[in-house]
Amino acid sequence: MVKKALYWMPVFLACGFPLTSFAHDNAPATPASASKKTFPSDEAPAELTTYGSGWKAKGSSSLRFFGFKAYDITLWLPAAAAGNFSFTKPFALDITYTTNVTATDIDNTSLVEMSRISAATPDQVSAWSAILKNLFVDVKSGDRLIGVHVPAAGARFFLNGRLLGETSDASFSEAFFKIWLDPKARKTDLRAALLGL
Image (cartoon, rainbow, N blue to C red):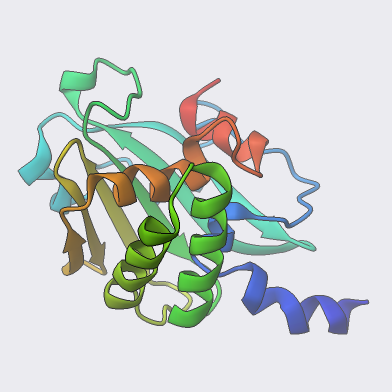
């Protein structure tokens, strides 16, 4: 059983799956207020200063798969959001990986979940697939990926402090971040922890 879990883990733990997570997680997601250990830092990432000021962590959690931790994740909101999450305001997801994941796994699993959650035409799905392929690279344990949602302007992604890529496709940005933050997200306890519910 453990060997099978290890074999399939890279597929299910792609940035997308860490995102989506069909994984069974016996440990409940932990709200930020309950444990600071899951935060990458008490201080907002420097990459976020361009998109607002006074960034604060709304919530944080970890994703586990058969007992193995895939990553820690934090939702950051700027002061202008007044602590209220909305797709109409900037926000950022901050992921620190504890496993290696290929770009192909990130692309494929993200696209599956984006298509499942968001109503999309075949043309949109095709466009989103191209964006994912251009944006993401292989990640390794210890890498920190930050995705910033910029309302009506798309998304920016940073890997270990450098700009990884960006897109002006606002529909892509919303569909991508819904993987974690939409009521249809597969990992409902992780979503609740991020949103402080």
